[in-house]
Length: 114
Image 1 (cartoon, one colour):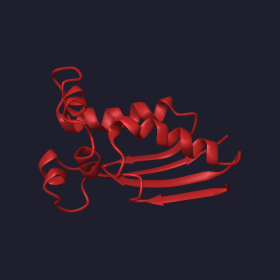
Image 2 (tube, rainbow, N blue to C red):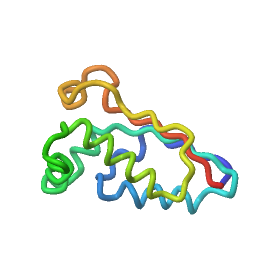
Image 3 (cartoon, rainbow, N blue to C red):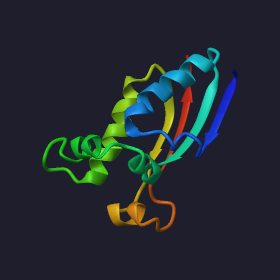
Image 4 (cartoon, rainbow, N blue to C red):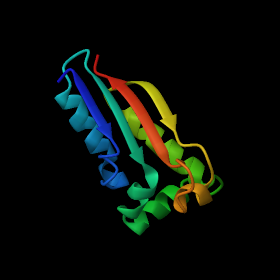
């Protein structure tokens, strides 16, 4: 495929599957192909086992859940063979994305297969 667009369709997975989804997108793209991906972390949280979420929360014992989740997503993107052009990860507080205020919790990614 030359282009993949996934707008709020991949967030029905859980955090554990996020890396697999990035690999799947990589396999679908032709060299030079691009993907635009948006997802919402609130839904990812709801679909992820509580023990796995706790491991993200307590990653270093000092960071907030919000920062750990951002770093977790960035870590998965770095592991991926995709070349990420844009990694626009949500802004806002834990309260905002847990309670659904505004668009907080949204992750926007643009990636290319080299």
